[in-house]
Length: 475
Ligand SMILES: Cc1ncc(COP(=O)(O)O)c(C=O)c1O
Image (cartoon, rainbow, N blue to C red; front, side):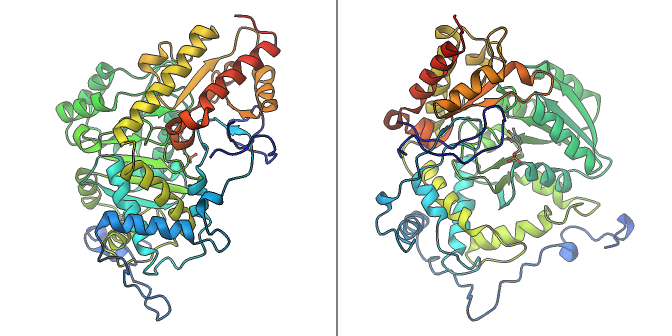
């Protein structure tokens, strides 16, 4: 039996709380007066919290990283006062949540979130965020990158790019493969970037040839693309774009929106020459929503340090956050904005699984591909339904599938029938065709990595078939 949260039948993002059925398995600043960025006069307030009650010494800093990670893991698992044995904790029975994020969260990750309240600069907590920073690098195969992890959601990652990497009046090229391309472009414009978009037809992505031609027309400071556009299920060619930028426009900062791809799609940030990867906690990373995570290459940091204007955001300023991240990683801690300590315990638990345990990150990507192939084949061959991406197995994402309703069907015919079976799918999202399709998310530890134990994929497919039949669909 499969676990899952509940949400209304036709909304792509909202949720309700009925749970019953399934046992859980588991300044007045002007440019002329501006100081260089390296003079951090508008920079961080990296004052360690210097009080006797909240000492800033890293208690665990003497341990090798792996032992420290394990020790924190044990601490997480035994901390909640009433939970002597973590095996005892099982989340409440609930509907299976198979939307493209938030996703199902493992019991131990939820339990980690239930950690007693901690000082964010205490010696016990500092290594938690420090480890998360290191493990996030491992997750992206980016040993040189500078992570930033803060409270927020994936959207905040766009603000970080728009406020730090590019300056008002500079050119940005946005590759648009759906809803999230429109949004990233809008965000960049809000911060004063001059945005050009290459828009692909629904269900596809701009070709490398189109991108090359555009890069040869003018100098772009930034090129952004949505690795997986969650509205369409299109997977972009991150590696190909990395090679293209290196060859045609090596100064351009290449930004990957990985909100729907980190930990479910292959990403080799360093090797592929990706300069910024931004994401959120609630999808492939298998955590509750509430964290923004990004990693910046040396090239992206250099672009930031060479700014003529200061970052045009306060909360999203790298001048504030990067020194804080470095301090946590060094084991001392520092303060800009209070980190969401509990969520970071949860992130620590999930990143530990992703980067320190079996399966390896490469195996995890392969498991997502296998699960995705299974879903796409079933939908296509067994149910006779089309996808938004014409050849979903070749060009589609591996953590989600966007499926067209049978002719004459709409969301109200199908999604409530799935909810009745305690399975929550998402409605369409792309503004031009949202009523024509629904979306299945299959990402992360619980639904994909532990599918052999949980049987969630069989369950969602069977439920889909039954719901279609009940609605009168015949292949
Ligand atoms: C590809 C993509 N980018 C950005 C976002 C925005 O992330 P958030 O909703 O966490 O702010 C989403 C959300 O689903 C997304 O799928």
